[in-house]
Length: 83
Image 1 (cartoon, one colour):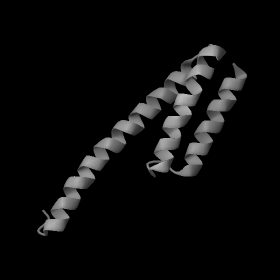
Image 2 (cartoon, rainbow, N blue to C red):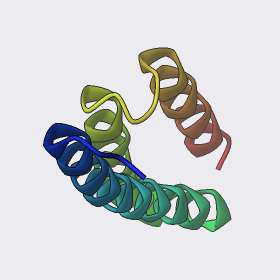
Image 3 (cartoon, rainbow, N blue to C red):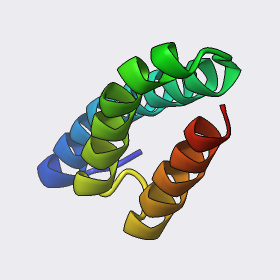
């Protein structure tokens, strides 16, 4: 276990941050899954801006890499075009 005050605080803050990151990642993954499961083009167009916003937020906070965000958005746009 950590002995220094700063190390104890770092453990506390990183645990808190980890939970927030996990929640945001899971929320985004569920939104992506829901969009991919959609068969209606109209419904997909409605969901797309929200999902892209979630992905951009994760990339901005460095939870996922910028290139991964771009790849996800590209694949989702491709999926929408095929509907």
